[in-house]
Length: 175
Image (cartoon, rainbow, N blue to C red):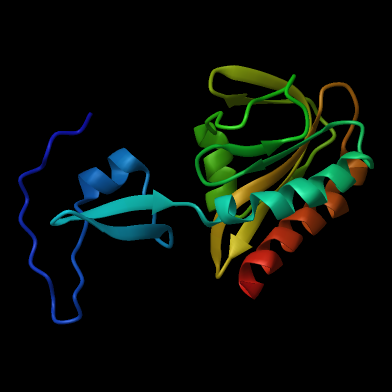
């Protein structure tokens, strides 16, 4: 656990403070992410919040329908971990993303390769075919939609992956 940095920060004229870089790095807080501010007793509590978690019911509904269209597994992530998986044999909700997947998200890349790839979630290796599309909210990549198939090409699933990512983005924008 990160020890208290002992850093004192002044509040500027707009009421802002800067969270030290070491703390942001330790907690995985990136530019554009949401932070909940609460008061507990006489303390200010900051909590990292991922907006995708507010829409899990909608994500479950769209993914249940989409699952009937694919032979593989649908995986939805936030910036750090799996938030939805269509089957529990592949991954679990809460499994962490690898640095490679985070880089795909940060660079707003999409992939639909007809070659075997390997990605790691919480030390679990998934080897197979992947269609990946980032979820974008207000210009920030906030998660990924992944369709994974262990044995079969996912080339035909790119439009579905893109559709699910855009659906989630628009659901967030409407709120």
